[in-house]
Length: 620
Image (cartoon, rainbow, N blue to C red):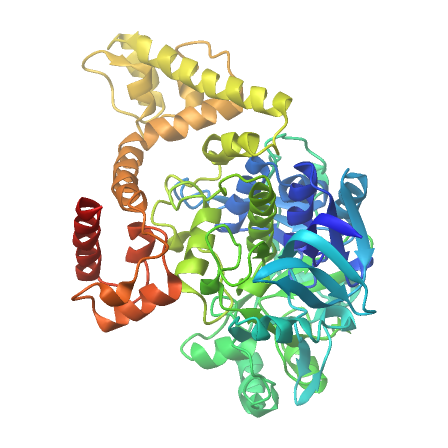
């Protein structure tokens, strides 16, 4: 039995990886411990949010599945940070935990070239540092040309509640007990990480009069550029906002030693940007309260998820904590919170293609690489699936640059800097975030998706038409001019923008912060859809800032284009700082740009490298 690609793990990374490989016409096998848990959402019942929502748009632009699936499973949609600039605006969807996995499984089952098998992988077949296949728990060997590991939180996972520790994965599933040992034997450095989940509450037991309503937006949104609306805007499920209080904090502080983390039972390092509630109370003693969101999990059952309240306290303490919250005084806990720790690899042992440096044709994606979040996992899975396929086809890998995609920022951070705690994407991690917006993900990445064969011709031609229409609209507004006539100035005064003293093009008028495309329609008929108009509105308003960011990106690209030979012996380069030498030898960056982002490599070291490369080129 042999396949071209085997994907191990059926989470968000595994689904995208398997679909990408199969859609590129490679025989693909997806192996998962439990088919019922494919595309499972064991923690937060949402997709998107700051930076993450833009990743979902990027996945869709490249031809991935998460965006389309999130649109089908949406209970509520909201665009975040609308009062701020477009660089930080992002879509967030409250998802149905029943519909989302069901729709993804339906997509997987309908995909040609893809088979699904329920089993656990215990070992890898490696010959001469090249992957040859996998070995299942019953000893069955399955050969393949490439393997993609997307094991999530199942590698030697343990569930922790108070002083109790049990070897199992989410939902009490069996963990993968032996695979991380295999990776260690192959030379991979293994990390121990931790994450957690909050209690689930029976909806009927909550007094919502003591909460603040958090409704969805009144206008429809989609992650996918197909723009199909699957939810009723008028019937979105509400979320609610509450806060912890002095009593909550007292209960936590009085029982800290009983939590798994503060009682010394946790080995793994938890997420810095999504800490447990006890960690928040300890780390931020000056804060009198912390916000929590009450979020529905599905329209098919009434569990409410307390977002921001993950904990590893014993059950009896969780009861007290929950009952101290406003509106939850009589709440019934349907599922108690827990912490989970698991093995991951040092992501600095990966290439930018997500192929491992130690074993050829072995790729990894998702939480095994030290990340947290469904979106980060799905983005990596898509890239791993694409690059495993391209490797088998003898083609160059798809490497997204930091100025092209948040997925590029994510992967570059992983392979260049590594992680100490579960990595979470933030807008602050992207130095070119004005270029990496929610609205322009297709303009940045759709062509890549088409080139690698994941975007169909019909969709690509629709995208080309959109690009053409944006240019035509810009040309139209640049050619149309208005003059300081009385009726024109009266209208400008009405919309609270400065009156004209000289003539101005409609394009330059649109650059004014008080003016939007609807105001421009007062002067001229615009025969283009809202998507085209919105794109031009944003790029015209921020044109100067965008041009500045693009120039900065060009400088960065000049370093990215200076490739570092794979056989470069850093020991022989004189005057390099010892820390820089050690880090360069360990990570072996592919370019000067990547080298410049390694912690411990300073500008002086980069200058030395540039001089050395010039001398080497002359001698060659």
